[in-house]
Image 1 (spheres, rainbow, N blue to C red):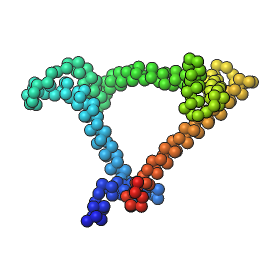
Image 2 (image 1 turned 30 degrees about the vertical axis):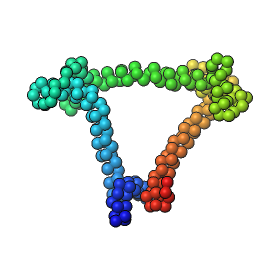
Image 3 (image 1 turned 120 degrees about the vertical axis):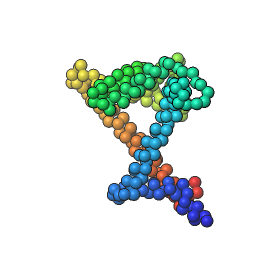
Length: 237
């Protein structure tokens, strides 16, 4: 009974699908394609369900569509109030379907333009705050009475000398990268050497980012391998 429970359990199914994905390391095969199609199908179904229950139902169906259907006697239940403001996003949503007909496909530009404009208006201030202001703040570590340096020294258990040197290196590196991307001045002489130092800083940054990505992938791999070992009762954690 224990073996049957082990064979026909969700953990066994998860282990089978994990091994099916790993089988691609040998070559592409029907088992891998089965797991791939299952993953894509489940992701699409889960994404649609999440979109419906978290976006469409509370923001479209409940305040607008369902009340109208109730008043047309297509649905029963307690009458819900109609929020007529929702007719505007409803029309914009329906305009996405205009791409089906070539004659009216140009109407899809309206919701796209609105979405891009709204998204840009919301994203630009956040990007400016995160990528420019915060970068400037972390570069100079400016705070009253140099408190930022003292807090950093305490956090990483570094001496204040090391913190000062690190801050200077970061500050000079940021200036070098900005100098490299400042094309209004020809990169010659001392300025050109300083700009080339910016290239080195960029390569170090890209290398660190790539290394972080690789380590994240290794973390996922180790997690799946540990799951398989636990499934085989080789490890107990």
